[in-house]
Image (cartoon, rainbow, N blue to C red):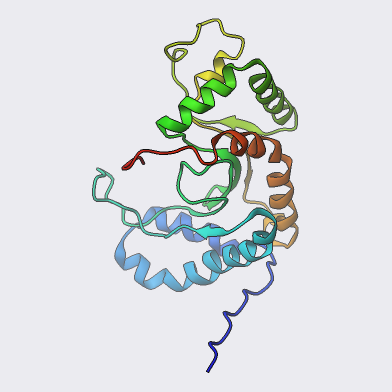
Length: 230
């Protein structure tokens, strides 16, 4: 007897207004008691729209991953048990995914990013050599300039000084200092987020930063990461 096919999520018709309000309420009472009462709100108004969006975009941007709502509090001073945001990524899981696409909703609004949020040491070494190379580095600098001109913010933690082995006055010192690099857009909660046009905005934002994703993947995909790296 063949297994039943997994049902496809309903078409994406927009984020739910209560999805954003849910995170506002969670911030005021981040407790297990709140979660137990409001879990249906999370499932219906947060997770289901993300599942629908993931199904719509997976064919274009690769396998999607929706992050769990629970925080890992084992090694954190912050013991709030639930994340006050919901996130969806394409192109690999975890903060060190190479050139992936990322989306996040929270009480404040919608955040969309493309790139590598943080690079592990082995990835950083390869990245810096590529940035220092006149050909590859100039290409990245041009991509970043184009993205900024198009309205993207360029993010990622940076060192205060140029890393060892590179001149302080290197023409791409700002890029060499980066420990992660991504292009992002943010929108506060507005009515258009509640309609299917939000799908077009997310897809076009991902596509508009594809050059950065391609540059990162061409150089960092397959870089061996030592065991235990996080």
